[in-house]
Amino acid sequence: MSAVTLAEKLYRRRRARNALALLLSGCAAAFGLFWLGWILFTTIGNGLHALTPALLTRSTPPPGASGGLANALFGSLIMSALALLIGAPLGVLAGTWLAEYARRGRFGEMLRFLNDILLSAPSIVLGLTIYALLVQLMGHFSAWAGALALALIALPIVVRTSDEMLQLVPNAMREAALSLGVPQWKVTVQILWRQARPGIVTGILLALARIAGETAPLLFTALNNQYWSANLDAPMASIPVAIFQFAMSPYDDWHALAWAGALIVSVFVLLLGLLARSLLRRSRIAND
Amino acid sequence: MSSAGQLAIELDAERVGRRFSGDRAFRWLAGGCAALVALALLGAAASMAWGAREAFATFGLRFLISTDWDPVAHRFGALVPVIGTIVSSGIALLIAVPVSFGIALFLTEVAPAWLRKPVASAIELLAGIPSIIYGMWGLFVFVPFMAAHVDPWIDAHLGALPMIGMFFGGPPLGLGMLTAGIVLAIMVIPFVTSVMREVFLTVPKRLKESAYALGATTWEVAWHIVLPCTRQAVIGGVFLGLGRALGETMAVTFVLGNAHELSASLLMPGNSIAAAIANEFTEADSSIYRSSLIALGFLLFVLTFVVLAIARLMLRRIERKRGYA
Image (cartoon, rainbow over all chains, first blue to last red):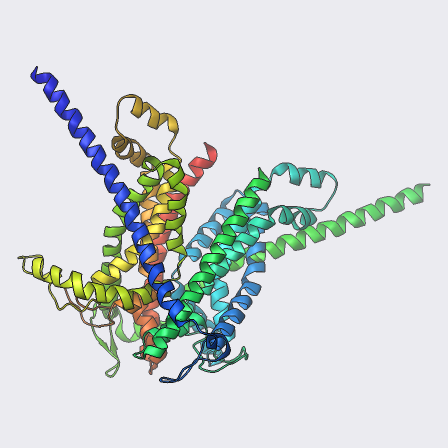
């Protein structure tokens, strides 16, 4: 009799512990979603209040005056585009080397390892690197330096996705093309790249999403600029740095501009993420 | 006849030769780009070490253990920001690891199938939000919230305790180590969760179903089967999160308070390596000041390199196992 109750007790305790654990796991998920909701809610709420047409037409104001973010938007666009122009081709070629010439073997493994570390290296350290290598040599801050710092962040993302996506291309495709006597580089450029294109483009979009919101590497490479500037050899404004400057200031006008910038960056980055994911899904279906 | 054949062979040889050189050029081009990746990392290390030489030459090893930070007297030490970096990341992991485990468990074992994808995507959205947004939200929304509701409670209830009270006493500023740690935790959760979820899915169904057949509960399967099976990769994921937290700049800069004093209390403002660099680098007015900040950056680079290397080694082994299985 007592043995039965003991077993019963143990059973109940296990059931209770299980129920508690599952409940807590649900709570953990709710906890994560709660922060997402809170952050998005405040960003959208405050950002929508601050959205005005002047954002797109006027440059960043001095304290106490009204203005917009036109020069910062322009600067962000220019520097992100430059960073991709530099980082994407290098990244795709490096990824191609990894996937096509170094799939196995020590060199490839070593390089993947280093690339993964560069991928998660603190962005402020990469900014400091560009400062030490470029800004100090040139003697002044410039949009070029900012773009290079961003390219350094984009590079490992593109390398990794290109490598992975090219590895997914079936070997039969390579063999079929090579057996027709097509040289290997043509096989790579005209067949493999085409087949892996959605995946590679996804990587580039992800890289863009990452660098669009990066602040730390721009602080001491591109610096900031209160005025409209298209000179790549001079300091240039950008949305994230403008947000940083305005949010840290004591002026309400500037806070509103910072929220508007925050909304613009968040929406841009999240939309890019969605676009990248849908592209990736389509490429997976194509490869199956 | 024979000369025509000869010509054909020669033409063919030439074409093959040209093709060969095209292949070789492409191979070298791609290889060169790949080498650039290694060169970038090496360049980062070398340039920081070079930039930091003045600080290390002036202060020597004392730089690492000194709490000085006096731009006027040109005396600098790394201890306060280094401790701040480690403590804030430690708090972040303390919160993020159990929560991430819970979310991963929820997403792989508990939630009904229709709920898994939307929740997983939403958690991934957290990873996509730029860190400057976390910083702004932290400064304008979370810091006042902590100052009004959380800090007074902690000060009143935990601050009065013997022994551990010193860690929890202080004015309700809202800024400080605890706030920074919580914001970092939110930022790290999606990264750790996504690694855990992925490796939990690699556990063979046979193993789990055998345990279920023996009468194990879902929790027992997760704790005694899934977790031991994936321990290494889970640790790798945690280190990946740690690497993120250590190097995170903007979010921490907003909520840490930028104070160069050592304080035991988690409610007091502090500093971290990344925040110190972000706040002070453009204002550094002497070369020794600038060099000290670069030296801080060098320390951060070394620290994150070690942490990330451990993470990748742990994760690599799992990837390889999956590849051959």
